[in-house]
Length: 187
Image 1 (cartoon, rainbow, N blue to C red):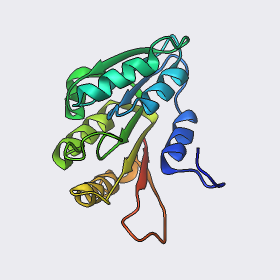
Image 2 (cartoon, rainbow, N blue to C red; image 1 turned 90 degrees about the horizontal axis):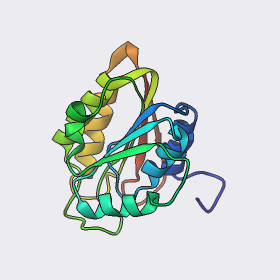
Image 3 (cartoon, rainbow, N blue to C red; image 1 turned 45 degrees about the vertical axis):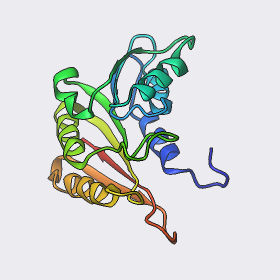
Image 4 (tube, rainbow, N blue to C red; image 1 turned 135 degrees about the vertical axis):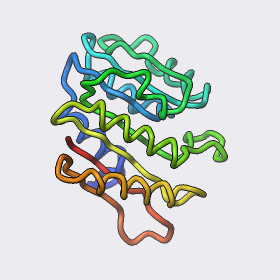
């Protein structure tokens, strides 16, 4: 949890997702990372639901498996050690929520980051798979090498969706380095 009254952007993304994802639905964690988003999605979708997760790092997949192991009442979770760009081949239509947390694995190798081209392909797939009223959340970290370009590309992608989407951008003002932003897209 954040220290003050204002939530961190990841907490805000969780709050938004909890307003949309219902028990028994399908959700996607496009960037499994340390498994926090995957766990949230699995709890919200419940035993009748399904969560599909992606990460290129085996460390992230294993950490997420360990995090979920022994927790009851969760959705069926299917983890893929591959880029989120493979979403179109692995996930059926009718997705309620897709979460992205871009950048690098917290505590992991900073040289292994999400790539703009693959992220845009995954966002296109997520949009096509999303049900009416569904939500995509993307937390972008422009402060690392390649992160600024990726954040700008995600924002341009979201704005380019047109009238079928409601797009919001949440950010932190007054920081010395480029601060993270949350882009949320509702179908």
